[in-house]
Length: 614
Image (tube, rainbow, N blue to C red; front, side, top):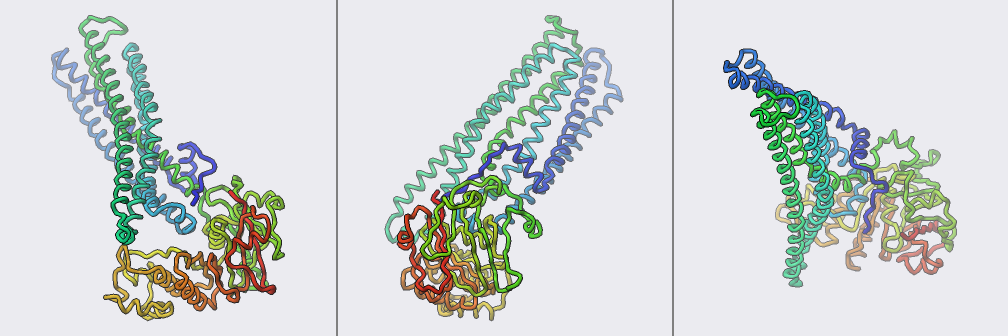
């Protein structure tokens, strides 16, 4: 299975601005509000340092107690700093929750829209990690790292201007020292980003391997292969531990470098001020105790903001790793049905208004890469259509527009009640076509009907039989039992200890045929008129395949069926035959050898497809 990549990779900031504008996340507004509040809090603290240093100067030099004005000023500044810090924390938490909710809602809509087209690309563990970690990583970078980055620039510059006014020599020393911190952050961070990406890959592989082996525990026990699989899991775990320690070591290195230069800078400034107050150094304007103490309190504060930026610098590396995984899902904004009708790159439903029985009447049908923008489509494969049963169009005969599509056809027509057999070799593009018809993949046309999708791997949740059938909808017991009876599972249900309320657990005792019958019962409950069948009997023995195929044909006699199958099916069940094949076949004879079931009657409408090899 090939994974589709993002065609045009953008920088993290540019991609963030694009997502912010497309999804109305309000990142810019939140960023400005947090920076303003945090800067006011720090400025209040710096002004408080002035009052404190003035009090110390009066006590030590002038031998007088603190004035009421200084005490009130110090108290007001500290209280204001504390209040503003609380406001900043509240704004930060609220903004993170708001942005994370919007990202999750969009991602949920992407999953609903693309469903099988996305799920079959990666393991379940991959999508769980993406949802739980990558969205959080992007949010933390956008609303924590960028805020601290802005503060670490604005506050030192403004404070540095005052320090230059007090003593240009100290100001120059601070100016030389401050850039060393971000310089080492960049050097260390370049390697951290690559380490985070490798760490995520190792984590995803270990999780996928573990869940896959849990599913296959009965098979491993039968073949006594548990020791070998345990060794594989141990090796993958050690690989993950190694990568984790590399990430941790880089984090420790970054903090150690920052602490070293921050401590060195403060020590040099303290030595200079101390010798200046003792009269041992006379470089630049004379320094009073108040000025020296204020500088010694302010400079560590500035360096601490730089250190905070270094402490959250790993968020940038995590966000860069998350961008690689999230960009394909956010590359195209979701559109409403009203918007789709006006967009030339979105799928259209071509129904013949003169004939309401026609579900699809598509001319120049094309299917595109799920991640690529319409104007930047990769030329991977194409699909052509010929009206003659022995004509296979080559890729040279395709138009320039068709060459940019994964699949294309001159004409496709589907009417209510049609039974279509979709055949072709593995990887030719049968599933792509079904995804396009269901609207899960960008295409020029789609079915504007509710469809039922039945795959070769039915999903069985750990809940009860009732929950597996209802799937967040509500049906009466009579409806559920009727569907169970229709798919010939009443005997299986009678053996369960609690009937419909029997919990399936993570590893239900269901054969492949029984699981498919359960998915058929779901389809019957939804009462959709169009079924898309993606090799529902692919992994069943021939006897089960024959029984289940007859059951599907019986249950779908009043439905519109588009049935992809590698296995032989009776020709008289179908009135259309669509064949998907790669265009590197030399002749129609070669094409016939690759198909499991070919049209046997001259009266049927024969439709042939050809796809370009990747």
